[in-house]
Length: 256
Image 1 (cartoon, one colour):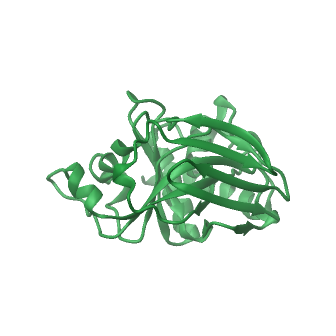
Image 2: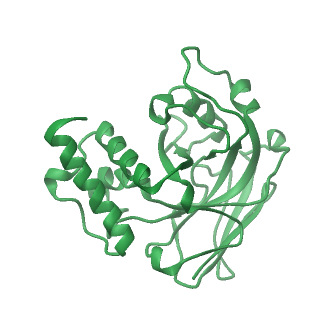
């Protein structure tokens, strides 16, 4: 990306960063600054991620079993363990997604020969229940009219909370795994085998291979979270959130 268009997309980046830092969302980017392609979406994502420091991992998901996956970077500074308190001044939207995440033990650099399934999962240190917290610089990021702007804003990533490791994850039948999302003691969502991708185990090999042009390669210590099981559930200031997976365990957080 070069020339006047690069300058426009950097201006879009700064609008998103300012909106998040000052907690003043806007309806949408000015028309001339809106990304118009996946390439421009990824450019803005990368600029935002660079401004926020180390990339701690990637969110990857697909809308269905037939859909091509997509990915976005997750800043390390927005990650924390189960039980984390999320500061009120940074969280306005407070969307919640129950997810399954993987922690990498080894690098998976870009290479010409595709990684096999076994090679990718041999690089996994552990598997965890997780919550992705959704935030945005947009007032209403779930409005279909702002889809590309929303995607450019890190696909709404605003936090990542991981639970204890479940090491025997290869024996889990994720099509039968049950999940419940509880907000302030009230069960808001229950589901079984409900990961949006249809098969979350296909997502890491995709990210290591086809997705490597996006990631530049995966690194030891990065988290890979694999899409929602519960849709987008909203919380409020002061809410306590718990996610219970039938096999994978429990993860929780609290909003200040």
